[in-house]
Length: 314
Image 1 (tube, rainbow, N blue to C red):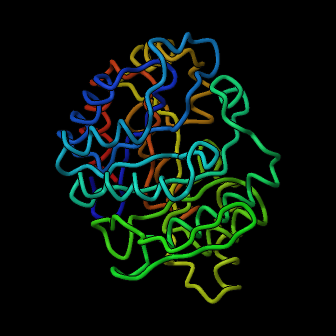
Image 2 (tube, one colour):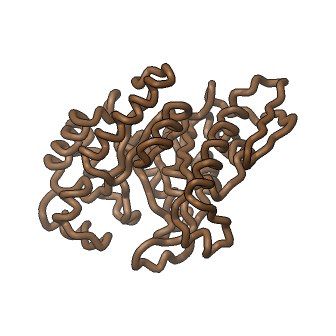
Image 3 (cartoon, rainbow, N blue to C red):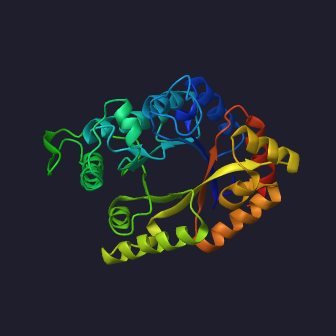
């Protein structure tokens, strides 16, 4: 990949994938030059697929991949704040960062998919309470990582209280692993990004929507005296690139999508079309990373085509 623009692979294993499936894709992504392997953090399938053989846990997966890869960045888009308490999550991420030699990134969101909470007995508070908890989680996780060795961390919030925490273990990356925040909320989301985000990600939106939200994050940064340039901008788009129309149609059919819809809303078409669309995104939004949502994990040739015919032109 290029020095100034990174292509990252993003998978949705709740749709039906084993750890071995993810390992095969991650190792192939590393071998073909992609910058990172990310996965969703969901426990229930979406849409008409069966979801079989069942979900895999995001941080268990990333721990395994940490030992099986050597260069790839590894992370989540996004870990649901409803799934884990902030203290244990800080421990898990720091441990995987150690296991990977410092290659982990934490994407953290408030949680949104009510059905998966119902299916697995996970509490699902109101949107306001989820965001209140989310803000505290960000403060706790980053605070634990920032606490100097030998000192203790405490936090007295409305939802979480920590007392005399040794704030261990420490991640390899200093001052901390990168924190990713995303979403389209017009007020609280930009405010949290300005305070805590190293990267702001917008998944599956159009260029105009993305540009407007990035501007809100920039303004929120300025309000608190932070340089907006410190926050990396990124986006995620579903991938469906083929060498010709037949190839594109075959890949669209494999993931149950319409070619023209994918051309409009995703990164779809020939390699030349993909390069042009990425160029438009870069010019109009300033993104420096693009997450390619790969839905057919059996099609490794898809990754090869993008690596050989798209990436060199960026």
